[in-house]
Image 1 (cartoon, one colour):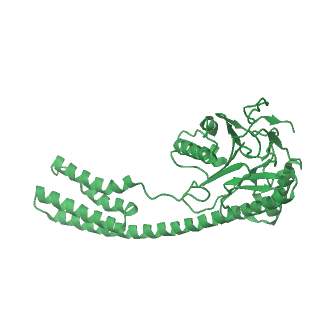
Image 2: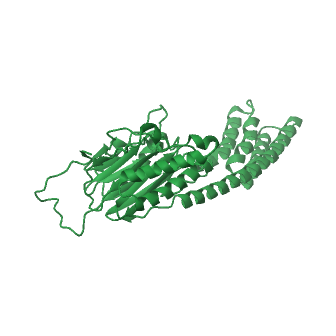
Length: 382
């Protein structure tokens, strides 16, 4: 998916065959051991197992099939006894109970599905899809949800073309739910306004910091401890340089020429909302952004994703290869690698945002000329 919430899938198709497999196993075991082993517990378990993974009709059909298998086995081996009648009566009761459980679970699933749809609509309203192109930049984004519950996360991203250049933001607000939504909405609005009115990147960062502080002062409860890690980036109108202000966030990656280079800040800075503890200075790092390079920004749901051994995911090796000048391909590659690393289960929500710089169609291509080549991600002096 692009921007939005990934819906949790239905149970995998292979799970739907478990009740039938259980009945088949019971039938085979009974024939093999010639009634020396009781398979009634397997027959009884089949409708109960069917309740959470099959429909109401499927659950009832499983119970009927369990009774039919039991009757067939008795008919093949001996005359029915009083004990058999009790067993089959128990199977009928268990089938009725399983059907009731199925109805309750179906109702809960519908309520959860409705909650997810509402949450997805809110997420899209608060965090709309960015434009596919801004100036010479091709843009791509993803928002991946870690858990099945409908809590809305605090990850956000934005890009705006302004008279001062193209400005980008990715941030991760502490917490989830309505508190996080309020902060996300406030930061996005403040960033949009700052992009238009602040002449330089430090001014944009200070306005975001002021908005975070104002929100904290007006808040109560857990919101008073809110903060947001963020990367605020700027590319001037001539695309000559990439400026980045990193506020305690994961370092962006510059993917170019088969190499992924982390753009680490020269001076660490505190997250938004905690800036008063570190003074008013806003460090800004400057890097080269070659034509065809892709800038990848992401939240900690990516680099803190762990495998079964607790090893964190490292996107650098995954992106250290040649890519077409397409940010969609780059992000799809990252997400596929994360899914393999974690077994498909993220521990935290993840937002990814990428831009690829295209050639200047208004100017001649001098890439094969005698000009001096620049190293991707080379830091400029401030």
